[in-house]
Structure formats: C-alpha cells, structure tokens
Length: 152
Image (tube, rainbow, N blue to C red; front, side, top):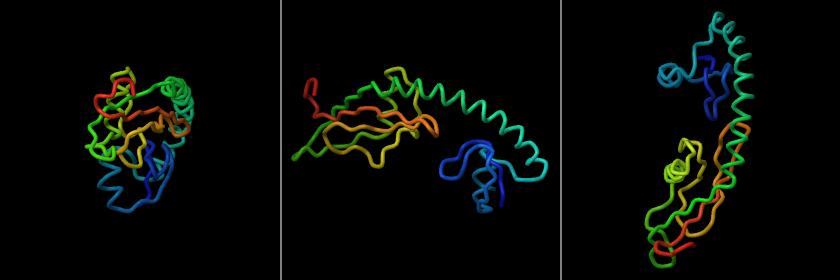
C-alpha cells in the first residue's frame, strides 16, 4: 500500500513523502491517526501544495528549535535516588523523569524527544540527547546522585 505522509513519522519518512507500507500498518495505524493519506492521483496533486508549505514551516521550526537547543545545552538536572550496595540504584531515571524535570524549569518537552537507550541506573553525570527537530539535537546534563548527598 502506498501512502503520503502528512506528518513526520520516525523511522518511516518525513511529511510529504510517498512511502510503501504494509496494508495493516497503513489501514490500522497511519490512516486512523491521520498521519497519512492514501496515495491517489488527486492526493498526489495536493501533496505538491503541502510540500511548499512544509518547507517554510520546517525552516521556521528549525530556527525555533536551534534557539531552544542553546537554552537546553546550559540546563543541568539533578536526580537523587536511593542506592544499595555498590551504588546500584533502586529504580532508575527515565525519559519521563527528565521531561518532567525540564517542565519544572519551564521547558515543555515531550518525553519521546528525550532519547535514552536505556534508563539511567547508575550514579554519575550523563549527557542526554533531546531531539528537537530532525536536524537539531540538544544535550542536557543529567546528574544522578545518592539520596541525601547535598550538592553532589
């Protein structure tokens, strides 16, 4: 099944791309969520208009994302967690925790934009990538310290 993407879909394509997908994925996921439309001749004509608008919108979003990235690169987050023997954490620091901490500092970032391969399960400092735009990634400094350690 061929579809035209109305939004950027991670690992599939960008807005305006014509992609081939499995029938079930298109019919049960992309179309109901209005992430794509079927690739008919009429829709292909509409896509040309969408692409012109998308170029302008993407440039504007990129400029905003670059400004936000500069602010986020200066942000430091500290999480205190209980530890057991050998400094193993009880629990972990997840992308949701990082997004919530960023929100308390005034940044509205979706947890899916915080790219952690695995939750942070050890003490230390980490540089966590936050993908703001397909071409712009910020790095937030995250410190995980032992509960009760002041200023660590």
